[in-house]
Image 1 (tube, rainbow, N blue to C red):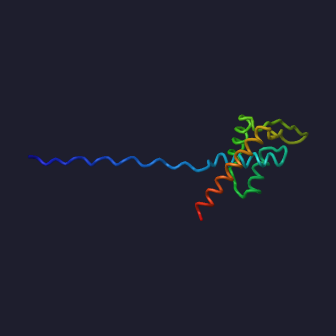
Image 2: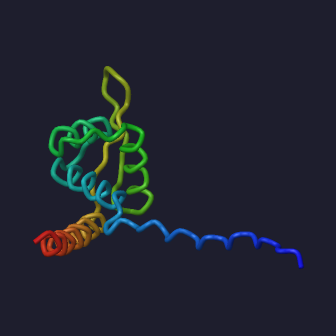
Image 3: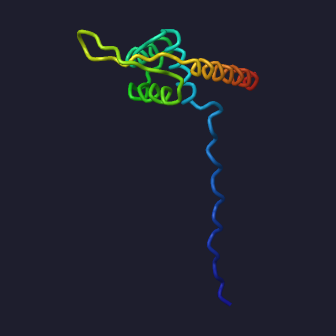
Length: 122
């Protein structure tokens, strides 16, 4: 009788990567909305600078502009072009009522997450 070796049984698949408790994308959207709300009306480069100044993080400019466009597409921001006598036209953003409601909702979710994290690290 020939002693045949069986191929090793395949390993089980790795567990799925855990999803973040709170998606970073939503936090960035809240940060951008909060800045636009506090400024009343603001253009993209100023949003980038305020994120850096107020929150101490440097988000790449293309990500800021993509977030602004996404928030506008979702109805949370509106924009208009501001043309000055000198310099290029600037797209100015303003928060909508829907944007304010969304911001309240996200901030409430963040508060709940903070409470959960505080309990976890005790």
